[in-house]
Amino acid sequence: MRVGFYQYAPRFGAIQDNLDAVIDRLESVDCDLLVLPELAMSGYQFCSGEEVARLAESVPDGPTTQRLMELAKRRQCSIVVGLAEHHAGTLYNSAVLVGPLGCMGVYRKVHLFFEETLFFSPGNLGFQVWPIGDTRIGLLICFDWFYPEAARTLALMGADILCHPSNLVLPHCPDAMVTRCLENRVFSITANRIGEEARGDKPALRFIGKSEIISPSGNILHRSSETESELVLLDIDPMQARDKNLNPYNDLLRDRYPQYYK
Image (cartoon, rainbow, N blue to C red; front, side, top):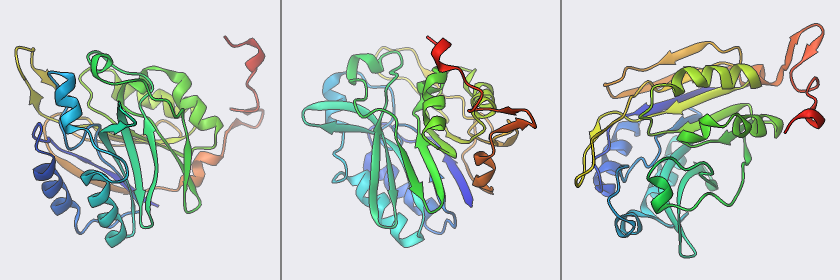
């Protein structure tokens, strides 16, 4: 299976221009699964709830979902993208999965970070797993990495690959995702952004890049720079994530004792 991510710097508020640039970059991409960053077309540092509402989109009818569905159909691939979603009068920080046949599903971020708590509601759909051919993928968004229960829940649901759109500003996540993969024996694809945003009178946010693909054994198959745009595609065997044997005597999931966990 050929998987990858696109790390770049969107321009705040310019959804159509960002979409044009991203789709132009991906127009000849040859892969099965591609992950884009969190809030990939709107930018991140909102100044008000009204601004979020103006930039939020419906799913599947909004421009980001519609145009990426068209791209996924042309390229016969699946794409995960983060966006601000409005649904039934509520705003969510969401990730959408599209494929050759259209919109496959949406995940709404459960663990909101910092000022996201001012503008978005926590996700109400829980964690879900979707099939892509014989492979099963689960979605996380950025700060969900901080809660090991999120990745473990997806692993218990059968996810082979964790797709992780992000706008990371803290330094810890790239190394922490090695642990998430190792402790669940899954692949992960973290698609972060680069650049800075400084809006209104707020301190500038610097995004750390370092998008990465991690194997079930915790190997960093690729980690990007902190500052450069990069489109990365790698070949993996997702079935490696089905082997939960740590040694001849220990199976990662069989040996759990949930009756003792709080």
